Figure 1 (cartoon, helix red, strand yellow):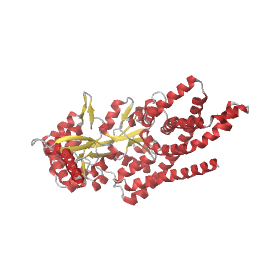
Figure 2 (figure 1 turned 90 degrees about the horizontal axis):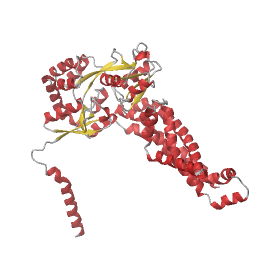
Figure 3 (figure 1 turned 45 degrees about the horizontal axis):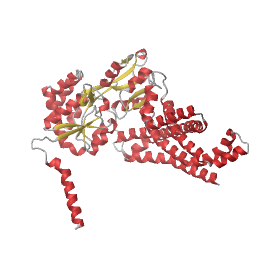
Figure 4 (figure 1 turned 135 degrees about the horizontal axis):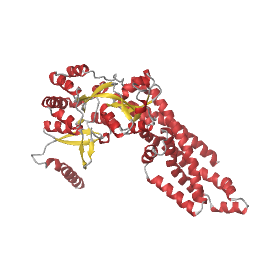
Length: 504
């Protein structure tokens, strides 16, 4: 009887969950879920300044055009730009539209639509350097900013091998230009749409006229959605013929002479091979196809090892700073006068109560008008200050855990406060604090992955670039995990040996 009641209850719950879908009105339209990254901003996908609850942008309008052609209602799904390929392959949305570039590697693992916009890669420099840096060949040994998983990144990686330019990858397309204006990088390589916006927002920047390369924007779908992709291709061609796509791009002031040539070829040719041939006819430069599997792993291993070295050095230096500051803060809270204790307590709570990511942004970007910290130094200070707050709590607790009787005995023997601290209290407190200190260092080693937001290419960031290029996290993730373990396990073993020695 009991089992029957449980079965009836389970069926009732299932019917309740399914009820909204079953209860839709006959006139309700199915949805076309499209993925994009609203962080990219206008003119791609952005929140409407007049009404932040709605989205605007040419990709928003393209998605609406496709949804109407399919008889569906468009619904947006936020996905980070570098995760769009993986999310599309997983089937998290029907189609991805967010200024996604047509790359050969994408076509090997995704169903890609015909191009709906052609762009050109543009090199942006400071006006003072316009005559000096005209092309990538002029930027040997110089830092050039771009976005990961883009045609610009692939072109820049090739230039790094041939011309010696130093690629600097960013998570967004805003800070590369602001950092160029501040002198943190020497140039930016991105598509013309972003370059024009970057120059408008930052005085003193200049876009070189020479094209570094050209590419196209496409939609991406899971490989199993080829039928939907073919239907979308038909809708895009129809919108090219009747001028609806042109109207969208004119509204966003993006229409130029490249588009009529592209549209003319795409609307008169059919078949995937002819579409690609048409793209080549308008001189679209595509990056070479990336190797996959273990061949790609062998190619990226040196970069992963260098990034692991950066992670280890950054973590060790940050922990040393955290230990030093934490010791001072803990001593001040235990021995300092009341005003000092209040100030230090407030500082600890502020640091512990705010995200590390926010602190890194403030240090690197927020203070840029006052002091321009190098990215590595800003990462070191940010991690050190953040973990100093946690370390100080460990040391304070350890100091206060020493039995008061021992402190009384030290004073009875005539030891000064300093002697009592260094000879009696601190050694015992260190033994108590050693285990949590080790845990904190392992946590810091992993939290160092956050510094990629301020352009430090550490292990996790390099792994994400690797994964984005081959379209899988299996091999890159396994290699990244192995490298992290190879750094953290020896430390844990060393800490256990020290603990045993101190216990004796």
